[in-house]
Image (tube, rainbow, N blue to C red; front, side, top):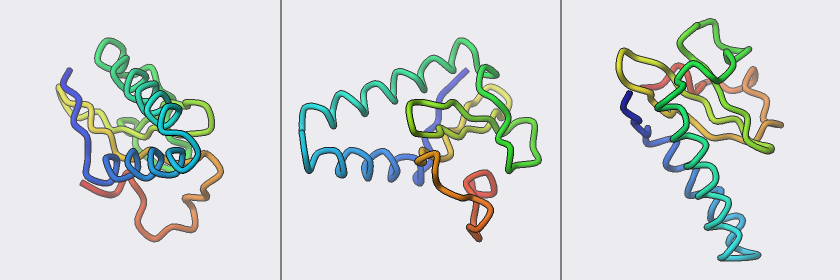
Length: 102
């Protein structure tokens, strides 16, 4: 399987890093590296994440990492990382949802 990062997911990673970096450059880098390591585990076990409850699509899944949801879609031999969002975010109120993009 091949990992593909969507532009929104890359933007999410940068935003998370920038937020944590306000307090600590070290911990920002460390946290982002741990998110990336979690994502890379999908190459071996792509269906390991649970189905996204708000999405009606068996190919749209998510890994839970601390307080974040790493949303991704399985497409053939690709794993597309859709978004990385705080778990408290209410997706039902968003007009554009990560699983509707790309």
